[in-house]
Length: 483
DNA sequence: ATGTAC
Image 1 (cartoon, rainbow, N blue to C red):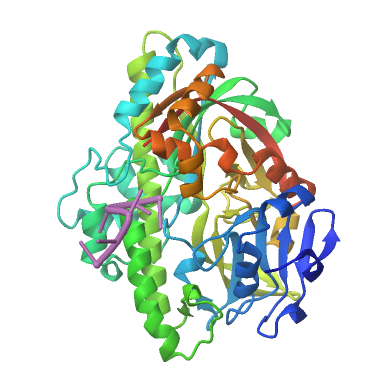
Image 2 (tube, chains in turn purple, blue):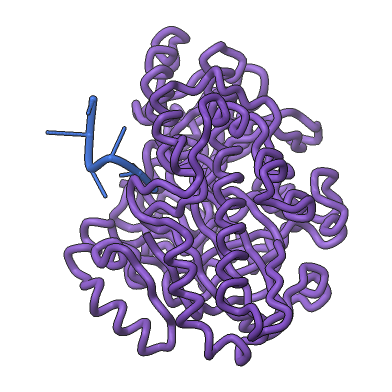
């Protein structure tokens, strides 16, 4: 167990566990927090897991953790690990089981007051049109071989099939397609699990939420994104469903052999990994990219369902009910990027697990529409609480490989939440607050209760206050749709 | 997160 005399505070919101803490650390570990958030992680293994990641071969600068850190598989959720190419490692545990779990934010020109009379119908339409729940199939049945095209082409597949616009793709990380995805590196089992789940929500913390813009913090940036006070927005939070899960399982198993073969010494077997330059590392990267592309398509098809739902409910009632995209960004992904380390620009594999890319202004990978303000960062809160839109900064590039947090972060395990919280009661409380709830499972609802999470506003204050991101807008929920 | 165990 790591206690408070094992780390030192080096800035208002930044703490460091020195390299000398454990002989096997290759770099220091750094985490962003405040005293309250520090308390929230006492008793779980997240800091120990963070220190474990500091031992990984090829890691540069720091093992990093965001203020929403909590315990995960091997790596903490809320962790950022960058390893130097060519021989630094890549690890499925550094990405997570839900590859390219991420958030898409859609905007409208509808005012909050305008939509209120139709909110119940809209919530019901979204629930009916967007399939949710464990193992749930979607409306799209892929012909044999078409899934291979989908995982390699990503959002371009959706564009060709009429589920996307060119503007949607422009406002998606990597235009919704990671180059180098290889369907040949994905098992038949993973493909079988994925073939009927395109355009489905899944379960757990995944949701669709209708929000209203509560407050603007950066007026010029908000205007550029199309965010104005009291306007209606929609968030999608989901990932690569059974396909990504199976790919992770497959490669955890395969890379365990690679750990032996390459003689890697790991403090925890859950850190299973392989040198990125090895055949195993390359294969995982190519398969992971396929799952990432699948998740971009998944959120894109859900966007299509959302547009359909707005049309069904609001046509003839609200004149302009157009739903357009602000941005789509992953928070479970490994990416090869160039970063400055010790004054030199080098290629690194940045693992972001429960951490969101947050590139600052001027980054050449950003679309022209956002290059001057920095990358939009989408941080969902918990049911019934706020969500945030931020932009990346120069500081995120120098401190955290262009990364920030991904959400509120759990404080209570799923099982404990299920035991202590009644889904029906929670639903009543949310409805009393005026939040429409459509959920397939009451126990699933209980797992995601706000009290099972940290305070997202506090988490955001830490990333904003430390300079690694800048607040743009706060969103508050009006309707939540869950599997 | 997940056909919450193959």
